Amino acid sequence: MNGAGKERRVLLLGANGQLGSEFRTLLQDKCELHALTRAEADLSKPEQLRKIVADLEPSIILNAAAYTAVDKAESEPELAELVNTKTPAVLAAEAARYGGLLVHYSTDYVFDGSKASPWIEEDATGPLNVYGKTKLAGEQVIASQGGAYLIFRTSWVFAPHGKNFLLTILRLARERDRLTIVADQKGAPTSALAIARATAQVLDRVSGPEGTNSRSPDWSGIYHLTCAGETTWHGFAEAIVEEAADLLDGRRPEVAPIPSSQFPTPARRPANSVLDNGKLRHQFGVALPHWRQALVEAMAGLRFGQEVARP
Ligand SMILES: NC(=O)C1=CN([C@@H]2O[C@H](COP(=O)(O)OP(=O)(O)OC[C@H]3O[C@@H](n4cnc5c(N)ncnc54)[C@H](OP(=O)(O)O)[C@@H]3O)[C@@H](O)[C@H]2O)C=CC1
Ligand SMILES: Cc1cn([C@H]2C[C@H](O)[C@@H](COP(=O)(O)OP(=O)(O)O[C@H]3O[C@@H](C)C(=O)[C@@H](O)[C@H]3O)O2)c(=O)[nH]c1=O
Image (tube, rainbow, N blue to C red):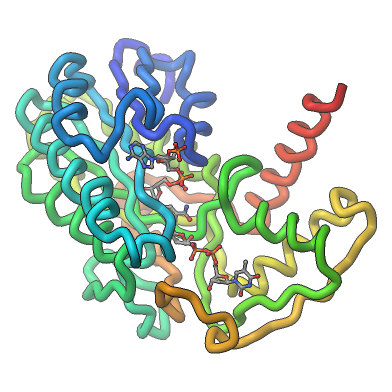
């Protein structure tokens, strides 16, 4: 957000997550930012969240909190539903009541993966797992509250911090000589930093005269927001190992492609979850960098973090 956003009161939820951490850094000087972690705002407690929002009446609620443990969600469906569906409905209802904007994130896992080309916003959904089902239901309950909202569906999020595929692969690459990674699921790795920057750009675009004051502006809706390009989890792992040669002290483990059938997981995942970003580009003129460029930037962030941490 540019300087004009300084008067905006922003409530950031999930401030310790991958995306939440990027927002904290990006927005701290640009608006009146209230960044709350799980300890301060627990989305498994809808009434706590209702009170926080009612007391603060933020002009923008940035919901970066979510239940994101895809496999664990299969055995904790109620908790996943509470965090990903029921409490977002409360946030949207509160925002609609006093005229605030809810910015929320959803996932490529709302699709079943059966389409050959990139998915557009109007395509039929069909989540294959509990996480995807609770995120899809979250989209639907937010849209039904009648207020201003932006739902950004993103995918395969990585950052130099937090829990993600990039850091998992770096750990495995240090421990093993051979990694086996599924090569029949494709998508678009997307950095949390690129998502945060793109979100800020969109918020600048919607802060015009009609801006967030309109109860149900015509830009309210769902947008696909991912890095450009596509790859498989195997391709992503190969790129990580290639880009991280120095971080691995010259180690170069083999990265072998395998079918999903050889990596059984509690949750099923879509075969193709690449998202078409045309609507975001046309409506707001916003486009994200290629995933490989975002990966290089995240690696630089990782190296910088290690430098700072070194005594
Ligand atoms: N990660 C990914 O690959 C993708 C993510 N998304 C979506 O993007 C958004 C941001 O995800 P991302 O930053 O990657 O996720 P992270 O898992 O990195 O962060 C999620 C944050 O939510 C917090 N959280 C979990 N449960 C609760 C709760 N009950 N109350 C309050 N906070 C809670 C976590 O807290 P704590 O730090 O204490 O664990 C964490 O800080 C989410 O909506 C997610 O569904 C979409 C596609 C891909
Ligand atoms: C660690 C590992 C994973 N895999 C596979 C399993 C899976 O099919 C794929 C990705 O595994 P992960 O469990 O890291 O990623 P996953 O939890 O599926 O990531 C998803 O998270 C949620 C929150 C989203 O919204 C999605 O966009 C997506 O990013 O890689 C291997 O093949 N070999 C391995 O060694």
